[in-house]
Length: 227
Ligand code: NI
Image (cartoon, rainbow, N blue to C red; front, side, top):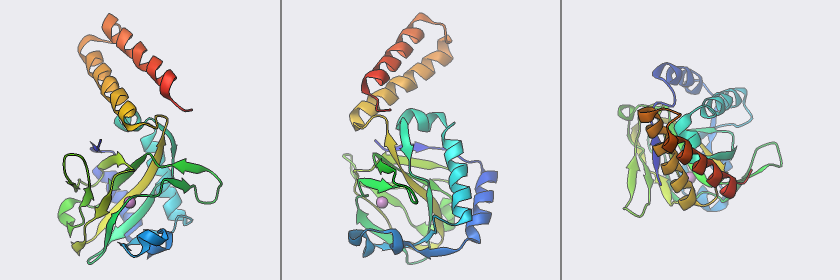
């Protein structure tokens, strides 16, 4: 399941991010790639220990904690602190699958990567190429969203960033360990929760069916969730 979430950040917030990102100290992205990915990867990344990376990463985490579609779709248990990359002209990242387990930098906390996320910080018209291409059962999908929008996809998907041929593509990327390990179960819970939300708008919190469906949702979470 590939889920776009529009407008996670407003255009004003994007401009604040970009003011930091444009003047940040970038380093070679291959420093953080595994041996298999190193030959595939050409981009720049922010040093995760830098003050600017930590500040922007914390800002993303605090917004995501209150983002209803993200919470409903990901049911996050642990989130790897968001990182930042920049693809300039000629940069790209060949087809790969992300590592199954990542360690939170500076700690011994391990995160199983159930979901991968990208938040775009460049508008689509600011660069050519640079689409996130994700292999899926319905064929490959090309993702190029507006600045401030986010895409969530299963970390088991083969994916790449197609070469940028003009301009610069800024983004944040990170991984989520979900309370629900199984993608199919998480999808069912997401569909159920989205229906409860829309029925609540139509009929109100107190409607018998809304109460019953909502209770069923929470009973399923109790049965299925790691906490
Ligand atoms: Ni990747």
